[in-house]
Amino acid sequence: MGKGMDMFGDKVLAKTLTTLGERVQRRVMRQAVSAAATPITKAARAKAPKESGLLRKSMGKKVKTYPKTMTVVGIVGPKTSIIGEHKGRKRWPAKYARLIERGHIARDGSFVPPQPFLGPAMAETQGTALDTMKGKVAEGVIREATKGAAKT
Image (cartoon, rainbow, N blue to C red; front, side, top):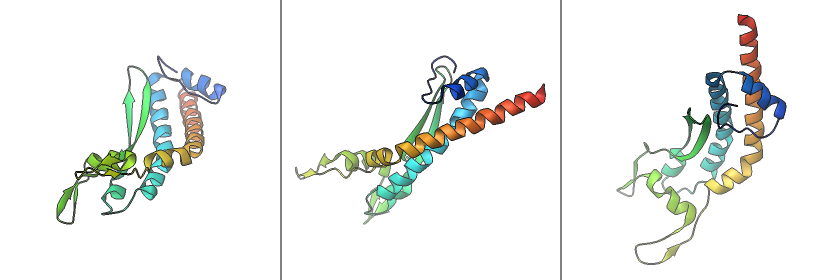
């Protein structure tokens, strides 16, 4: 894989992926990471506590690519663009999701216990996500290899 990319798992698949160009590698990895983040996002949405429903609605995924280091990252969490209202007050799930996940001290000084939903969602779907990612990388490598063979 290019400069700093590490892929764990199938060594033959990783070796074949390294033979493709960096741009093709990034495209294949982006597709695989996006597919792997989908079940995690669905599980997080299902596990999110429901008071106003905004936190569940805001759950989403984002794939970020760092070309210099050949790193592709999947981010699962609340979207920053979702803002709503609950009981006449503005609610911004991206700002309070971490407080629900880890717990916090309320304004009156009492401790509000954590209601984790992202951590358990990740733990629950980790195997599925890894299998999905391996399958998508394999599909992408085969697709790109056949494209390259057809051009020559």
